[in-house]
Image (cartoon, rainbow, N blue to C red; front, side, top):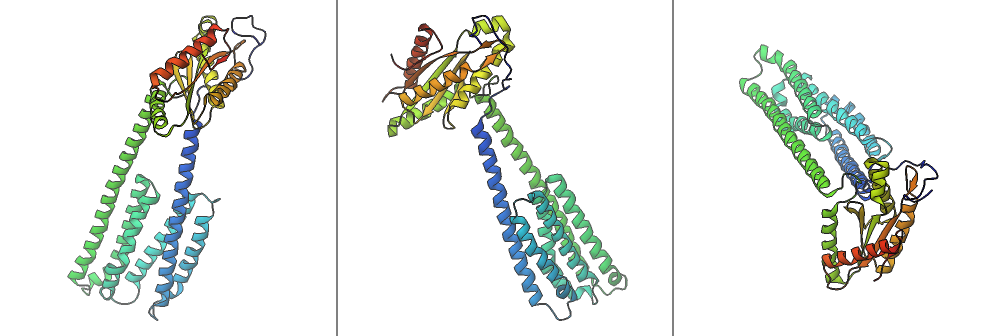
Length: 385
């Protein structure tokens, strides 16, 4: 391999990445998603625990002639207990668990509703139990569909449940309506309940729409913020973001006397790369150098494209000696990057923020040391002078 202004001796075999992705951001996103899933699992476990307790209490306090509670509730109780274990079993996808539990809840609620309407005896005698006790479970089921699914599937699920509940009510009460044994007052009362459930679906669907719009707005704002602070060619932070980070760290340094250092790197013979191999190769060289610099930096550091072929590392809690060691690692890493037939090299300047010094003064000092490295022959680190 040779530096760019010497005759080429071999061809690069290692492809360079198209962009340098922020590893810290990816890791933070993964951790946030994992934390959210864990919270949801524990929340579902608590809800299932409460459902299990309610099932046991209902079974213990059942009427002697209530065959549904006596025979079916033990099955649902066992299913709720098993659901707790499935929710907390991390190997099982949460989406599958959510859909299964919602389906089980739907079967339980609608089966109980059908029992109330189709069991022997007058519907009006069970009107208080229906409207004051059981229809609330139907309402909870409707809302749960929007929690587990997205807006479209949640709406379809809720409407399906409402239609089934309405059909159960119509088929159960039709005989008494036909023979006049169900009072008009009771019929209107049941009708109002179903109208209320329909209005609940519309209201929750509207909130789901607003939630999705808000989430899209947040996502769009994050994308715009990322675009405003990211260099398109390298994927690194841009000059604006680096300056903001430097100003933030300068304030903290003034307050707590903590060290802050910067490393400024300029690719050697970059114009020659563009002239000899083309601008695509120049972009590849920048991306390769950016990857090398990012790999040498810590998660706490900010690696940015400063301008042109210059890259900047902002290193908090880092002394001049530590930053010089970082710069030397970066210089060696850049030497291992190849573009077409040539090896890259970079000249690096290093400076530590002095007490009471401003950002502009710090940048002038590190820039002067970078050009000192250029004057001294390139492919070197200068941290004094």
